[in-house]
Amino acid sequence: MYEYLVGYVTYVSPFYIVLEVAGVGYKLQLANPFRLQVSETELQRVYVFQAIRENDMTLFGFTSLAEKQLFEKLLKVSGIGPKSALAILASNDHVGLINAIQNDDIGYLTKFPGVGKKTAQQIALDLKGKLGDLATPDTLAGQQQIDLTNDDANDYLNESMAALQALGYKETEIKRIRPALKEFNAASTDAYLSEALRLLMKR
Image (cartoon, rainbow, N blue to C red; front, side, top):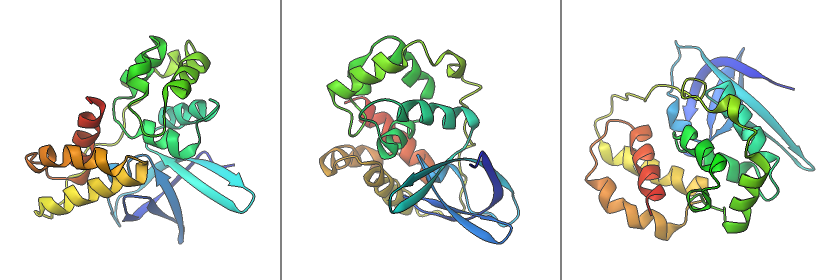
């Protein structure tokens, strides 16, 4: 029904953003909400996927058309729902994800929350050879890093930890990487979250 919405980001949380369009606030779940920042002056285009179930209607948002298309392809895999697909897309390394699928790298795919060996094999089986048009860095480029003015890095760290929980990572996994993140100096939640996802993928 929707391809994209253009409006102002009025709220960002670990779970979703609110995009105001013509006086209406749309609640959008993103793989990494902190790629966007609150602004009353800068219009943002967010691509949208609408999921309708018996008693629920959810809007998922994406910072590029290619990211939305990759999400839609992941949803076609048996065992992958919207939450798992968002968790897979939370890493900025979408080209690495596509390469893993093309090369049957099951070990890489099982590092995502909610993806076991069987599901990883199904992802590779269903999508191998079908992602060529999405495999260039340019088509998967997301928004620029957020540069917030608040100097309290602990807020960024705590927000990134909450975002990991929203994506489905286990508490033990989050606790394992937290000491390393405390030593990581960054000026945005997005940067902390990107580093956290990089550390989790190294396990």
